[in-house]
Image (tube, rainbow, N blue to C red; front, top):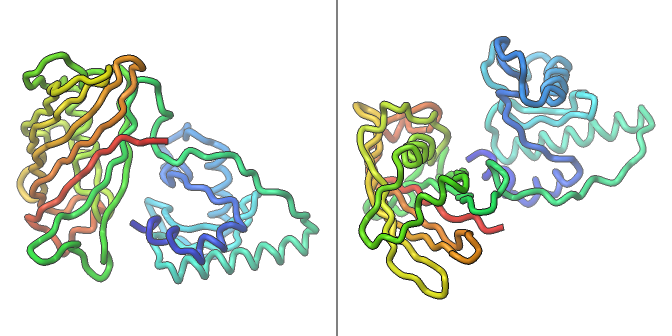
Length: 303
C-alpha cells in the first residue's frame, strides 16, 4: 500500500530519478542477533552503517523492523530518512532534503558525476521465470458492499495490494490433464498456494496461514477444449482457512490455457472470492473486522 501510494506520484518519481533506487527486505538488512548468515552480507553491513550514522530519534528504540524510506551515500553516510510508512508529502520532503545534503557533501568532498547504470530490471517479484513454469501476479481487493464500490477509510481510501506466486515446471504441469472430468490438483501444490497467497493482504500484510489453518479445500482442473495444439482448462473449487475471529472462505473460478507444442502456459486466471473476517498481523483491519467480501485474483504474468 505505502509503496504504491508513494511511487505513483510524478513529483516523487522526478526527484527519485536523481538517486539509484533500490528496494530490499529490511528483516535481512538489519537481522536479529540469532541470524548469523544474512543472504546479502554486504547490503546488511551498508544498512547497519547507515543506521549507526543516523541522527538520534530516526528509529524507535529496540525496534523489530526497519521499514521506511532512507537516503544514503554509497558508504552508508546518512542523507535523510523516515521510519515506517509515510505520506507522499513526507516522502517528497525526505527525498528532497537527502538530495540537498548529497550536493553539499559532493561539493565538500570533490565528488564528480558519473552516469547512472541503466541495466534493464525485471518488473516482477519472486523467482526467475522458468520455461514450463508459471509466474502469477496476485491482486488483493475488497469487493463492493451495497452501494460502496471500493470500501475503505481515511487511511486506506482505495485499498488493494499486489504480490507474486511461482509454480515450478513440475508443479505447473499438474494443472494439465486430458480428462474432461474434474481432476483435483495435488494437495501439496494446492496447500502451498492456499497457505501463502489466500490471505487478507488488501490493506497491508499478513503472515502465511499455518498448515493446520487449512480446514478443507480443493482446486480442480478440467479440460474443456483443444484447438490448434492449445488446450483450455476450467478451474474450480473452494477452501476454508482459519477459524474463530480470523478466517477466509473463498470459492474458486478460473481458466488456463496450455500450448502443447511449446510446453508453455499461454493463459492463467483464477479468482478466489468469498467472505473474510478478522485482524491478522499487519493487515490493517482494526476497524474493519467483518465479515465482508474479498477477492484475490491470480493472473499469468506476461513479460
